[in-house]
Image 1: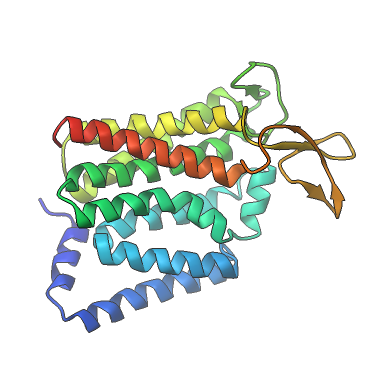
Image 2 (image 1 turned 90 degrees about the horizontal axis):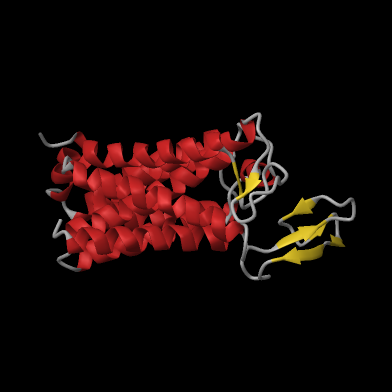
Length: 275
C-alpha cells in the first residue's frame, strides 16, 4: 500500500515546476506563520528553516518533509516540559545555528539520495539523523522530570539536572522511545522492511548515547560566580570560568556530530545489507 505522502508527491511531480514551487511556497509560509505564532524560531532560525524546508521538499518531497515537521513540532512542544538551561534557550526560539545543527546531517543524505543510486540507504540515513535528534530531545525533555539524580555517563557520579553528560533511567528509556517513533514513521511513509526500522532505531539511539558521552567529555562547560555549572561563556555580562571541554565544542556542535555519526553508521549498515 502506498502512503498518502507518496501519493501526494506523485501528484505534485505531474505538475509544472512553477505550480510545484507555489505549493511548496505555501507549505513553507504555513510553517513560518505557525513558528511565529508559537515563537518556536527566531528570525535567523526562520530563514534557515525556510531554506532547508524548500531543499527537503525539492529533493525528498512531502514524504521527507514529514520527518522534519514531525520532529520540529513535537520537539518544540516537549521543550516546554522541563526547566533546564537548554530547554529555556529553546523556549526563547531556536536560532539558525540550532536549526542547522539538527537538520544539516539529514539534508546531506537527502543530497546523496537525490544525486546517487544509493537511494534506500540514503533515506534510512536521513531518517536516522532525525531519529537521533528525536532521541536526544526526548531524553533532555523527560530526563529532568525523573525523581532520581542524573549521573555522569563518564564517571557515574551525581551531576545537576540539565547538565550535558548527565543521564537517568527515564531519560534513557525515553531516548529509545523517541528513536523508535521515527523508525515507525519511516515504515508508515516508505513502507519498507522491519530491518530498516531496526537500523533507524538503534543508530538513532546510539547517536543519543554518543551525544551524552561527548556532552560529558569534550563539550565546553563553565562555572558561574554563584558556583552553578553552565554551558554559557558569560552570564549577565560577566565572564564565567571554564571547567572542562573544548571552547568551540558547544551543545550545537555535539548535536551536529552525534546526528552526523548516527546517520553515517545507518548509511554504511544499510548499504552493506544492500537495502
